[in-house]
Length: 194
Ligand code: GTP
Ligand code: MG
View (cartoon, rainbow, N blue to C red):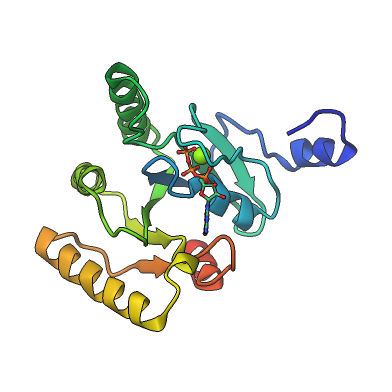
């Protein structure tokens, strides 16, 4: 974001930079490049979080106020960023987990997965540690615009429900969204407000 625009002051005063404030928080967790920052920006209606084609864009924990739902969104670094050093990857994973354990205000986790692939090995790992936290998890499959045909979508839905069942992952809340076309986004907003 470039500096010096009046609209940015607006954003500041609306409370987009509110680290440390209390209030219900929704944490955006997921593999690097899955689309966490893009979805967050779409929901907020402003390009507050940095996005990039290059995985590993978000490298710290950022807090943004979601005016519409009166909640705080937490944009986290992605896990499983292959090009980062092993040490970096481990310290990011530690940071994410430590944050989720420490912040009592997180009352909802959005676990984002790429609908082009279904859950990867690092997603499965994340699901296992999230299951231990006793915070409700909503699964959000991103980039659904990339599944071009009805047939592709139907077979991915089937494959994913089978996989979740096999993994014993308990979540009746699964959404398929696109930050590009906004498909599935109104349904997700409803869930987040509830
Ligand atoms: P890190 O910050 O590295 O963890 O990544 P992130 O999960 O925040 O991903 P980000 O939102 O930066 O998006 C990564 C890339 O995916 C960007 O090039 C986005 O334009 C693209 N992208 C995000 N959402 C969608 C979507 O719904 N559809 C398509 N086609 N591309 C998307
Ligand atoms: Mg990001």
